[in-house]
Amino acid sequence: VKELAQLLNEMQRVGVIRNYALFGATAQMRYTEPVATLDADVLVAVDSADRLDVLGGIYEFCAAKGYRPEGEAIRVGAWPTQFVPAFSPLTQEAMEQAESADFEGVALRVVRADHLAVIALSVGRAKDLTRILALLESGSVSRDAIKNLAARYDLAEAWQRFESKFLND
Amino acid sequence: MTDLEHMLERQAQWQKSRQSLTWPEKIRMAERVRESVRQLRALPRPAMPGPPKR
Image 1: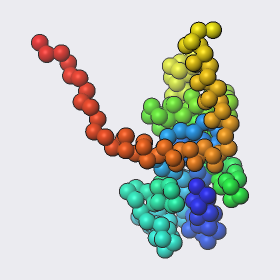
Image 2: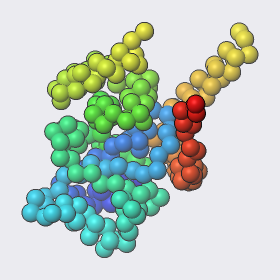
Image 3: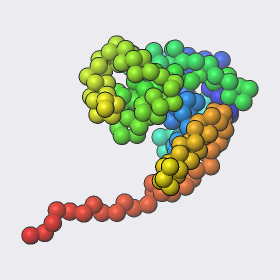
Image 4: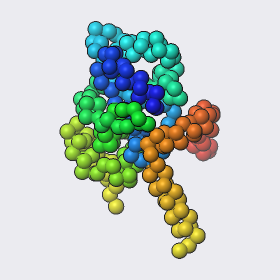
């Protein structure tokens, strides 16, 4: 992940991407106990509205650096990394308001716990719902914070369903 | 406290100790188990039992 942080910072510096933030399970582990995951997920903003393949610039830059595609991902060090364009208002806000963390001496932008929880709520698979429970359990985010953020993104009903299914006694 | 309660308490303490690891330490732990996870997910899934035959 340190190698990935260095690559992401370099891509931002030279303009391949405008912004980025780590999300998904690798970001979750900043707040919770370790979880099993196969890859790293990164939200990216790119200036390539004129390209059909919005991630083309990233793939070209990575190939020039010797990083090869692996399925839907690009392997960076130990981690197959999926680059996900931040298209929706929720993921855009999550990326823009991400925190700059220190990962073994390298700055790494990482999505905040409340955004991680609400992105998980919007996706809604079993493993995403488990992520919300883990984040709540860790104390890194409150029910109120999730509720307020979810309401801003039309997810109030989804949060209500989640609360009544998993949190209400 | 029963044996089961002891076991659950030890489990909870172990989980808390993992949560207090640094982020890089947790990432390294995830890296170590990843290959096993990949192999497990690649295994063919057992067929789900169908409805009882009449």
